[in-house]
Image 1 (cartoon, rainbow, N blue to C red):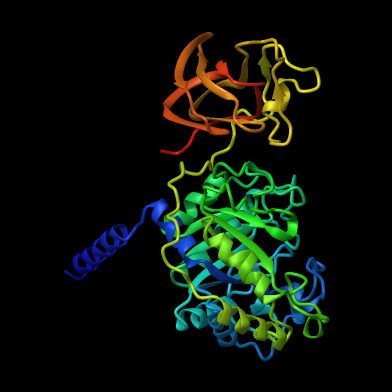
Image 2 (cartoon, rainbow, N blue to C red; image 1 turned 135 degrees about the horizontal axis):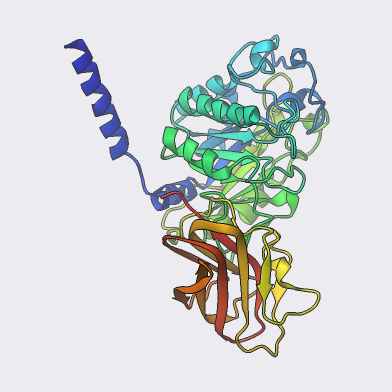
Length: 460
């Protein structure tokens, strides 16, 4: 009888959970409606005066004896922020929660308190949403390009499982150190799709974003539910043209992590934060997150606290902002065509077909202008299953009509006819098997160029 009762309770819990799962568009809208939040870079770099400390720095260094996450939460509230996001693990691999995956954590430090728990509890007590930052790059555990093992991937999954299981509802995970020129860890070495579905399996309403906007076009969601822009890295959203749910981030102080100079150095102008960031970004479907770095005591400096209060006096959350347009689902699978053999009709010598699938949106295949109906195809090495093709033009869209074909058993077969006027042409269809995919341009108003030709097999 007892077992039957427990089973009924479990079934009821699953049904309630399933009933509360929201559509991705609803989650994107709710995220943009949050408008303004606090990024909190607080980790081993805080105690090293460098954003990239020695990856083998002793846990003994981490000892914020006066840490009070309630101060952080009240400071966020004073600026009319609606959420926080804490660096649970940065690039040097130090975990500031009670993890079972490694000894390189706060529990091996003199502090021995779960910072993630105290942060989450403090922000929720002020009615603020909780988000978490997590770095894939981990130099302490030697998790770096060309050296990634199965054990590394299992560690990532287990750490994310801990963070998404032990700290209540997490509105979003902001991932960093992945698919960036400086980290060089690809979405194939650490499979993005696997991590994405792991997160969604634990918390279906948790948004997933990766700080990778520099690489991918602004017209589509590649590898994330939200488009992200790091202003300090030269990534700036188009406030006039953006049509995607977005996040823009900037530190209030000179750097992401606290430096000894911060208490006596001016922070960024509160009026500029309001007038150049919060207000205009809200009209462009963009949420603005401002980093405030706690000091080595675990407290925020007075000059930062004053700036936040000034922001709160200048800005109140507006209503009646434009609704976020519904965008195609994000592209999260590995590109089967990446660096595979390509062929094309006559092209410019310095922009041949190989540039169309080199995983670089800055290079492209250019058709010779004399070819009226150019074509290009990519091979897959052998016959594989796929159900999505993405064609990204190099600049403003020129292609008006086109067809897609696939080759199976040596025979080319029609796949679809298209007329998308978007720069990024996303086509999803029932799964087919083939060893090559061909893109035929039927009509174009100008020179034809393809920055990237992607072929994917998404999980259904």
